[in-house]
Image (tube, rainbow, N blue to C red; front, side):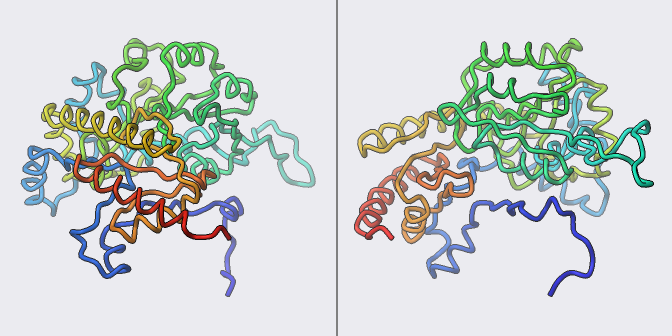
Length: 391
């Protein structure tokens, strides 16, 4: 049956975002206890949220009948103080994904024509579509946002699975509105060097907004710190995107934020939904900002896990991409088949076919025991996959 109304044609070829499979779903499917399953698919914090955050969220539940603070006054004040900016530099979202969408609302007006456009046949002439420049193997939400607003997606081939910044600069045209760069990049884990990123920003035309996605930035030992420039009013065409999902272990709350020039932030605020950050999330984030020990433990655990995976992959003769995030990409042959074999053994990872990386899987870093179990299962899965004739 066809729907009796028109659907946005830009959605026709747009794939639905596929998140990592939840533990409960896999347990039902395989008829095994949920507690026997390890999920290493969604780059979640294996230490969970901080105890301070959990206690604060429990207290906030007592007032769940009330709407949250729509401007998140206290959270913005604390976050601004931590970052060394003013609250006017900040916008909060339901995950950093929502901030990506707000950028689309503000900068990608789609098929609209200026008032001076000549009319043809009683209708306005259509202007060229706004363009968005991304790298090959970019985060899946960038193409979704681009299509949602009817813009043209320009995909620049990757360099060593990461961003080719020179080629991305060359792809910019007068119609380019936004360039998305993720540092570190998801799903590849590649990073952009400080000097390279600085040169890229210096060469970026002023009419183009750089949306620099720093969801995993806390896992890096060093990176180009652009906050002083934003604080001092420089770089008005740069916005940083960050999240409480990863280092703070609050993925279930859906809370992210953008850092940018106050004039840009004021425009994004116009298209933000009221009460988009719930009261429990605000309470949890406030407390999490105080628990620096939890974040430091998470970072140490992650670095240890990345080293363990790298050593194991070298022993197994598997190609992998050194990662600056809390996951690692490894080439296993038939990624979907190895994913299925691991799932049978109670390990959920992420197949990469949707990113045109069908020979790879992405493994989130877990606790030492989870990592060890995953590696043992991977050895068995690879043996099982190699025993199956290619089809």
